[in-house]
Length: 357
Image (cartoon, rainbow, N blue to C red; front, side):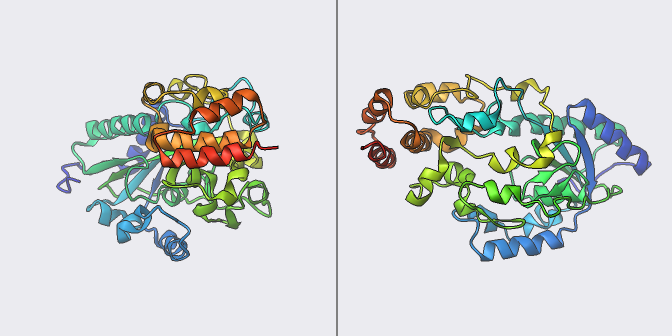
């Protein structure tokens, strides 16, 4: 960050109102301002790491205090502009119904369209340019789930919502189907009122979690979470969790799907987040038949790219092991018994064993 900002001393209240307006014009549903005191979140993070609930996500501890102290990550940071953007697509059938069809593939709703990192990053850069057009050069950096940033605690402090018992952010008027992004600035902007929790005595998210990963209110053991198992985990999926995964091949939305607050959620109008290649209604066997070249072509510009073709096939093999037995399914699995990947072969073998009568 360029800490030698030449920004003149604007009327900060008026500037914040302009920032909110510009944010909405750029497609964000809400813009908030947070200060950089994340001491409470830092304590919670340290406790979570001490319990090894982050599993193989060693990057969560790699950067020391930079994750919870924005001015250490980006020297000169005085405020964080936090934004949210809805992503829930308007689908032909409900995601809940899709989970009940074991021959279909369930992909977390956030990954059905264009990679959100690219969409939000471009909009946040435009927001920074609008601010500089008003006040002159300022020190700033844009983040979208791309650096050691505690984005949910920041968003909570900025009044965008509260962190629910499932550890996702919830907005009382919009539910939780939205992405978050941050603009670190060296302007001491007036901060918004932090949101308070409205989960009350509800524990639906804890009850519906297929693997029991929400081990207590506001406490997630990522090692059990299906999103972690299908996206973050690089090796073999533990056998004890494979049946629980069902047909979920990339991420899991159950804790959001059944959260009562999501009755207020609205489908997004953002064309970038519309499902591509019918991934919202795809057969497992069809996806398993993709060659690596087809996979590369059809996941171009998608968040799914991050897991690579090998883990994509690993996840599909598990889901096929949980599907109903058909000759087509057995043939699809048998075709991959001699995969070049030991990881895939092991999961295919397990899947075939599930269909032995």
